[in-house]
Length: 78
View 1 (tube, one colour):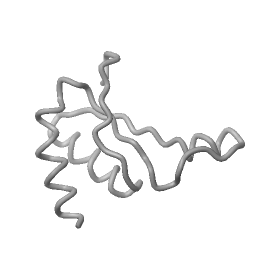
View 2 (cartoon, helix red, strand yellow; view 1 turned 180 degrees about the horizontal axis):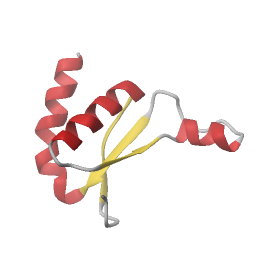
View 3 (cartoon, helix red, strand yellow; view 1 turned 90 degrees about the vertical axis):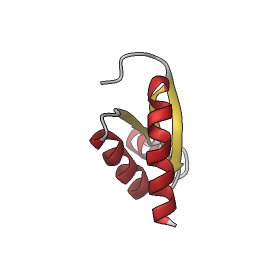
């Protein structure tokens, strides 16, 4: 569970990539939060954001541990 306000955006990408990354981070004990402005806007009745720009946030204290996981997954996706 994320307990503070020290959140850092670590990745922006497609829903598929963000979900894969989130799962891999959680497998390594790192909790994350997904922020999808587009879906939130649609649910509220207006368009907002870009459909392929979904943000993933983690605690600032987890950044060093998360960086290699992010780089590996992004490299594999290319």
